[in-house]
Image (cartoon, rainbow, N blue to C red):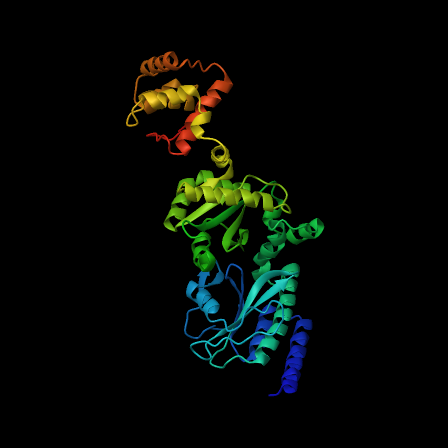
Length: 423
């Protein structure tokens, strides 16, 4: 068909789409009509690769979906198929796109982003289905995207479609996470109706691979197993990793009540998690996100499955010190004396001083962890004080000595045969 005929056909198709929208038949009906007008199978998925609506089997040769808690997600091979077989770039700005030839004709995908209030909320993926895409498909796909965006907004804000209820957080929080100025009243209206919106405080948890930088196409597989620990409705995709909104009960469950089990789950799935400090204002989400990101990086460096930002304070201070000084320059002289005098394979006196400070008001517990008698503990402490001049009578001196030991341990200058915490 020539250009004029094509534009006429597109205009007629657009009228059909608008008519259906005004009849308020819902997202699935709109997807069905788009598929019929294009003559190709298509689907819509959100940023977590959860299928919001589809016209049937997407590729005809690949199993497209997996089930998790009643939701449908694209499997990793399909996510990669959609990305690898795109014949055009996502239609973001509306300029003319060049056709990109693929090795197998008629087996490409056309991908367009569906925006809600300027934020990418979902993606429309169309399969060639044996017929090469034409300019007609490109133009009609743009109109489909606009109408599908309207359907998403309608479904999200009027609760017509419960399936889309969990899509909202991603585009509601996007600007806040990016640190952009937002309309706080509109933001508060947007989060109304969510159970977590009434929480006194919240935390961010970033879930990422243990080794790689981002989850990216692994997100559907992770969500499939994550639901047993975290409600999917409190997960969103941000910067190609999973961002989880933790309420106080969920935080306690994952870091206290079932800490051992959850950390084993992370290890088994080669995941690492960083958790922020508590925050109150949902509209100022960037600050706690940065805390969670810092905790995630430190968890990776320390080879830990999960780290909470509160537990990073001494490591952050240590890093700041190392940027300007040698750590040993700021260590207490008594600690340096014991470090120099004792053999690295034993360090009897340094070990004794360390556990004595860890269990400052429980000498029996310190003696038990050292596998010595209480009297032996006091004998060694007297020996340490006589050799170094330590008195441990003031909070300042105790703090300096303990921080010196802690910084040496964190930077692997000293390795102890025990953990430096009260257990």
